[in-house]
Image (cartoon, rainbow, N blue to C red; front, side, top):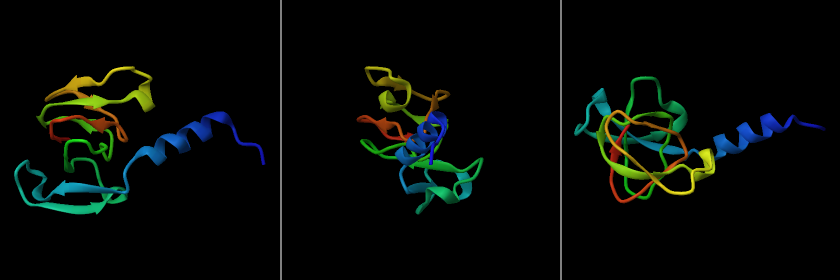
Amino acid sequence: MWRHPCSQAVSKLLALQPPTALRCEGGEVGGPVRKVESSELRDGDVVQVLPGTPVPADGEVIAGASAVDESLITGQALPVGERVGAGVSGGAYTGPGALHV
């Protein structure tokens, strides 16, 4: 069966997202963290992204700073420094710093 190249590309991008996420209960940075399936994440959830791990979903950095490697998504050759207010893509890997998204 023939599949459109765009649908294959989208499938590959979705496969980059990790199966689990560390959700901050109560939607607050510094609150208790619970490991959940990434598919359970909803708009407004806050997730903790540890150094060297992939971002579980697209979002905006609300705390922390890290170099983020989005090369598999954007083609950007070098990791980009992201801090509060920056948008990050699900599946991108964080560098040495932790983020809350």
